[in-house]
Image (spheres, rainbow, N blue to C red):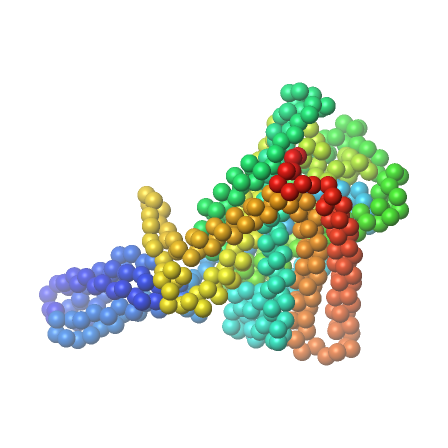
Length: 523
């Protein structure tokens, strides 16, 4: 091997950890050293790849493929997220189809309480989201060990069994959101058919369609998309979904403003509600409206997962705080525009969603386009909210059955130039999950009321309680100091808001149980 031109040596390694073969083109230099250029590098998860080669003289050289190509600073798969991709994830979550129900919330609260509620909830969400960003690494927010899930962060900072409570609330909440997105998507598709039916046959025509075929169709699409491995691979889908959310939000705002400019707006109120409502109904609706605003602003249940997609440099907590500001500022502007213009357009008769069949009906092609945007957005949003569930189940399965090829082994595939891998456990378990969510969506079309209940119960612990308590623990804030009293007052106030919204959701759920038949819902 010494002297002359370098001779090519082809080295073959099968790694046991990740079960991946890597073929490397190795050239022996004249001085006896070896230079290797990988022909093909594949993601092998949390492993360090070692290439061992025997030289003709019996000298062994070892080349370690470092994290520069595949792995991060702590040996985990390299992350590529930025403030913009994180902002897209946040916007995809918060500017959902729920933004179209905010005019109804404004109608129940009136101008003063409605606008004030949106601003207060936005400020509090930004504050607690920034507290949560500093809990991603512990004990130091910049150099500490990564907490890749919300449960890990709670376990590291608070100890005890608090992480179990956190996980239960978080994953039940996310599963509920998946069912809610499935229901909303089918309603949007039916809304397209109803708007076209009204346009052709008149507003009094009996236009009713079953939601079930569209619910099943949505489920089939999500089975395929659910095979996207993790948040690191979802940026393109979130960016597309965020663009769609802007599209239908601005269509709703534009139609509302056009109605107002034409002088067709309805009368509004500083206090809110309508004269036909009883005092009790007004109170219930106000509580539901407050809950809707609070829940629409919440993304804490996936905030740590979003942060875990960010590059390690610059520090993740600083980048996440920038993303929080961009996402929440955008959210607040869209919320206020949509809520205020929609309320001014419909007045006290504002429907639950201004772009569904009970809202605007003309121009029909623009309403159709808005509902197409809603469907595309929810296809992406579904993946954003379910990836944390997929991730934690697969992590626990990997820890429990680390030696199982069914759970651990990745099988590389390619379609043209696109290369990917599939795993039997991931394929089967994610498919079953999506199927169960789809069946529940068909069985319980009133699940939006159930979702409001789950969301109300999840808002306070996930958005307020755990970030505040972790901040107190990390900063070692003493009891009965001014800062401690302020933080606990914030805790108490939003606990009461969550309980009130939960009570109102139970009231609505009770009425819905007598209204719908299982698997027989028509819109």
